[in-house]
Image 1 (cartoon, rainbow, N blue to C red):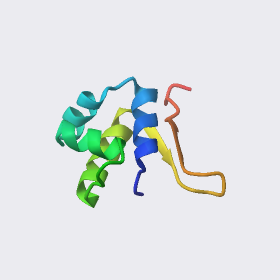
Image 2 (cartoon, rainbow, N blue to C red; image 1 turned 90 degrees about the vertical axis):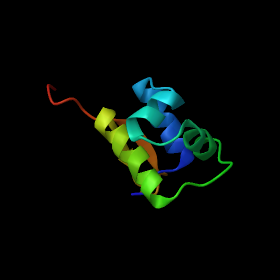
Image 3 (tube, rainbow, N blue to C red; image 1 turned 120 degrees about the vertical axis):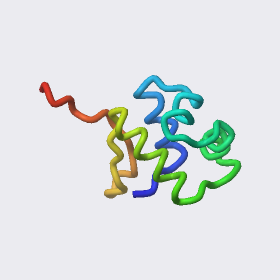
Image 4 (spheres, one colour; image 1 turned 180 degrees about the vertical axis):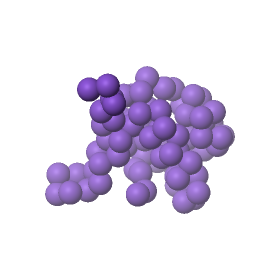
Length: 80
């Protein structure tokens, strides 16, 4: 699943991560995160995959387009 800039920003917000945190977690440059989220430049598929996987590992769950629009939420904790 390819994530959108809006999903990336929302996931970071839910996880209380700043752009630098995401850059470190995903091993991409801060400039790449800033450009992608700001929609000034696209990102190559490998970069999008790294961002998505890092956010998922931190607890985000991406919701595909299903008629209501693509989204993101926190993954349900296994304790519940």
